[in-house]
Image (cartoon, rainbow, N blue to C red; front, side, top):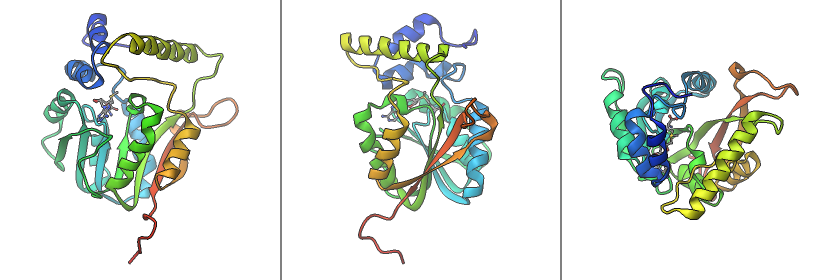
Amino acid sequence: MFSPEGPSLRELAVQAMSSVEHGYDLLAPKFDRTPFRTPGPVLESVAKALGPLGPFEDGLDLCCGTGAGTELLAGLCGRSVTGVDFSGGMLGVARRRAPSSGPGVAWVRGDARALPFGPAFDLVVSFGAFGHFLPRELPGLFAQVRSVLRPGGRFAFPVFAPPRLSSPAYWTLLGFDTAMRVRNALWRPPFVMYYRTFRFGGVVDGLARAGFTVELRPLPEFGRRDDGSPRARLLVAGAQPAAGSVNS
Ligand SMILES: C[S@@+](CC[C@H](N)C(=O)[O-])C[C@H]1O[C@@H](n2cnc3c(N)ncnc32)[C@H](O)[C@@H]1O
């Protein structure tokens, strides 16, 4: 899973004993050589599914890290691309590795739970970050995303079918989450990172309550499970006009 140039076990342990923000500051120089960076095939598949929903003007990559999603937005958005993350270390790497040609990206340090923007975007994407939010934080997070979207704008992210009880992946993720719960019961600051708390039903309800309509599109590149359901889908949440607003 990790290349020889990736973080050592000791470095990962130090990161995991820090806060989320500081942990990512520490991991940033080697982050792109870990499996935590969203891989190219996921980004390509999402870009392909989003293309027909455009054109888009202004895109935001929420919890952008070193810029995986901002690269995708650069190919989809005609006017501006912004990456927001609360780790200065991750943003520093993103800034250094951004291509010097093409549309410029604005890198903004900010907390996704209190976004420093008005309704300036028509597309928000996010990859690999929802495990850092507790279920009770999701309504606030979705309301923040809704508040930075223009009416009719979209919030999109990939969702993967959860591993089955009989698969090793199920037990690996359960083991990871259990270890994190023990760690967080014993140690401060907490490091919030859980794989099994971002549940599909709760997410769809939370998005609806924040003023989104939700649509799912299969990501065919990832194939289907034995029961015929897609292994991966793109969730596209459309921002409804706020109650009482008038469309001109
Ligand atoms: C696993 S990394 C994913 C980075 C990138 N999106 C990718 O797919 O490669 C999670 C990122 O979320 C950021 N993050 C976590 N909680 C955050 C919050 N409340 N506000 C802003 N960024 C946050 C971390 O700093 C980190 O850069």
